[in-house]
Each structure stands twice: as C-alpha cells, then as structure tokens.
Image (cartoon, rainbow, N blue to C red; front, side):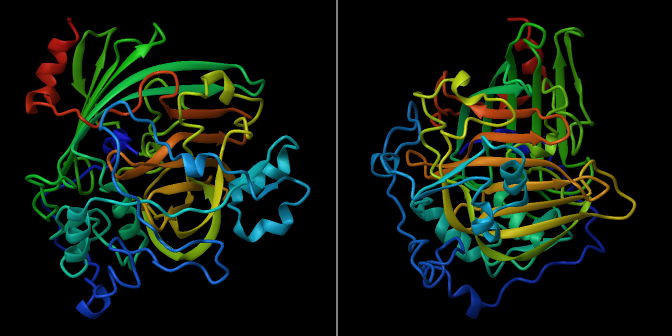
Length: 452
C-alpha cells in the first residue's frame, strides 16, 4: 500500500548520463506476451504446476478512497493449511528466506502459519496500457535513470535486478495520500517505545492525469512531507522531500525542520544507510518501503524466479482489531497474527561495488511477481553474515488498487531488538482521497507551518 517515504532515498540527476550503459528494451515479440500468458504487469498468469499457487484472478476496485482498511471476508476467514516451526522447518527450507530460517532456528516460539494462496492484486486499466507500452520504449541508463518511461510499470519483463527495483519504486499508489504511520522499537524483553508520524505524499509519475514521464532530462515522481506527533522529545520534527530519479544528490532535494533549531534546512544526508530520524538507528533511510532510493552503490542481478513462502494478504495484522500491544512479543513479532502464503517471487541480489560503502555489503530481496513489492529482504554485513532481516506484510488495498506492506518489520539479530513501522491499527487507514496544492510541499510553507 501507500508508503510515501519511498521518496526519501531515490536521489537523481537530470544531466550527466553520458557513458551509462542502457538496458535494452524488449522486442515487440516478447512484449506481446503481456496480457496473454503474462499479466499486463509481467507476472505469470497461470497457476503453478501443482496448483498450490493459483491462476491470477484480479480483483475489482471497491470501497471509498478514505476510511478503508484492507479487507476481504472470503480470505480473512480462512484457516491455515499448516504451521512451520523449528521442528519441521527442514521440510520447507527450500521455500524459506534466510531470515525466516534464522528466526525459526533461533526461537522455539517463532512459527509461520501458512494459508491458501490468492492472487487478486490488480491495478487500474491505464496502468496496464502504459506498462505494455513501456516494455518496448522504456530503457534504464546505468542503474538510476529510466528513460522514455511513462505512467506504468517501467520494466514488466525485467532483464536486470535494477529494473525489478524500479518497478517497485514507481509502482502505482494513487494520486495522493495521507498516512498515519506508527512505529515501535521493541526491546528484547518485549517492551516497546511508540512513535507517531503523519505523512503526506503527492505522486507524479504513475497517475492518470498529467503524468510526469521519466526521461534522461527529468524524473520527478513524488513529493513528501512528514511530521512527528509523538513522543514529546521528537514532536514537531518535519521532513520534506522532492524525489527524482537519478544518481548522486542532484535529483533529490530534502529538508529537515528541527524544533530545537526552529528552522528548516537542507538535509543532504537523507540517504542510504543514514539512520532515519527518530528511529534510534533501527531503520536506515533506504529501508523505508522495504527498499527505496539510489541503486548506484550496488551491482544488481536477478538470481531467478522462485516459489517462496512470504507474508501475504495481511489484512488482519494491519487492521483495527489488532492493537499495538498485541503485536509486540519478546524477540519477535506475535506470530499468531501474520498470514503467510506461497507465491512466485523475483529474487534480486545487490552486492556492494568497489569504492562505495554501505552497512549492508549484500542484500537479497524477494519481490512479489504480482505487485512488484519486496515482501522480504536478507541484509548481510561486511563479513557476509546475516545482519538484519526485513518483512513487509503485504496487503492489497481494494479501494485504490495498489499493494504494499503494513506493518514492515526489521529484525536486528545482533541485539535481539526489532523495529515495526507502517502501523495504522489504532489510528486511521490510509486516506487516498487527499490532493495537495504545489505550495504545500515547499520549504517556506513548511517553515510557516511550524509556527502554527
């Protein structure tokens, strides 16, 4: 679903693409598969050979743009097919991420309830049409500059890991939205600290009216504003970002308002493995929305497509019947709440490039074929040891026809702590009816807003 803070990292440039290799567009004969044996956004339409993953059956749009939590009574009332525990995990090892294996082997209390799989994720027709057109026109210059791309998924038949990640970064999420984003740092003993944030975003690329194309000369795709409401020590902190495609810092404009300084200032450090404001180092900027931002520090490759057990159709855990205190348990999330399903995912690996730096020397992301959302990520340190694990509990928003994670979880294996974000359970669901004036996302306006 809507996670506007994706914008915070995708730094960009509008010039200087000379010398960047361009990823080839697919031939018309290959693009002709879209809408036939492939769905319009590039997933395999058919069921798996054994039927455990069903054929794609896209859901129709329903519900109002405001006031709707993800829900599907037919799915939400199901019982699990089986439960994976430490005792039987070897039976399912080939379909488990390394992060899930670590959690299962480390804690007797950790389990994964696996339910029947469903493939209902859909997008508006204008996204389908634009995506099919992009297949033969859109190209990627280097890793960070899409060119000749308009409105739809950029690379529905990807040939590189970077192309997969661009599908995720600019996926359709409506025209604009407000989100009541709650976050928790959960200590090893299960106690937690709650942070409350309100986020606003306006989207520019994957929108129906007046979409801004991605080209070598321009690439604005989101404007974002957030304000921290609680706790008192963080209240009043505001972040503003104008997000463009590209490399380096030229395409990203970010500002930070600190209540202590009482002024808004440019924030060039809003990037990569910089700790996100207010998370006490438990989330890096490029972990928002599972991954966002520049790709230039890594080499990206597609390992392949594989059937994996991932969090999916997570309506209950993201809904109003679950309280914040229900989520937190010692060492890990309350595993009575998540729903897991078997799905086909693109496995993408990112390895740090010589001469660059990041806390993660290697990342492995598991990207759902139907939504282009990374439902899980294994993150390795410079010793190539598994350092963190991310889960995005994917849910489909029928009211706007988009999908994303709520909550997202980051497990810190060295400390026993974990971080929860994108929780709206005790506030309000995402409001996709929001539309903002351009002046709303200007630094001077934010400065004025701070005095109200």
